[in-house]
Length: 400
Image (cartoon, rainbow, N blue to C red; front, top):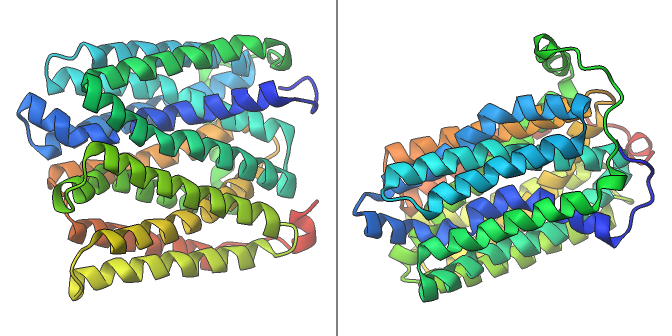
């Protein structure tokens, strides 16, 4: 889809903005959940459903938007998706009750799903293998700065102007991505492949189901994403309700997470040229279980404290960063055609996983350390099993 592989800072900025907008929509509102619950006089579980609705919207639209981008061009479909994102955000700004807020988040998810998926497809358009891993590492470092600054920004804005102002700021961010999309128009060619119709929508999906490498690493990435949204849904209540942090202070915790995530991406960009992908996974998984051991000890015999939670989020973020980057690389490098559809399948799998777990969290009104720990442990087991059974390439093949 790209004219060529030569692209500068402007194009990198476009990739950063387009790849973060969907996650910023979640993270910038994370500190607001307890406050919205109080404002609308509803339970925490009901407000958590706004996250589930957002993820459901992402899951339902992703396959279609990724598929269409393969035939109608990345830019055109991305612009349509961004318009839906703006409409959903507008609904949230003017929401009179939690039901209208949930509807707005659902519409928001329908649109922003496509932006995230197409951004990944564009990245895969320009590289593969270890080069793709390096680009994902670079983008991850830049993305995380924006994503993890979002809760802090959301907390500060809310403390001065109220929670609706946070959605107004996000609307401006959405419009900025639209502007960036127009600015890189010359680098995003329109597709020159005839559109085969929606009847062929599931053809690339059937092909992917035969691709064991894609399936295993897609499962790993989806489990990591489920961990991230579980933290978004429950972590804010643990830090603010159980540990007494304010929304702004919770945003500062997100800063620490961003540093840890960037560190993980930086380390990955350095070691990917020297270690096999399998060894990198083993190191990251060992680190992930080290963090979970701390949480399990809290559930069994150690009192919950801020320092313990901070150690956990640092270890978990470094490990999650490394696993996510290499999982994405392995999955997307295993496909050569229908890249938009492949990116859509991968992202939709993540959204479905996130929806299932956040829906369960909201249904049981889970907001404490014990359910949080056991959900994460369950997902860590899945990641470990898939990693141990996945087929890894030889080092030379990965570094082509």
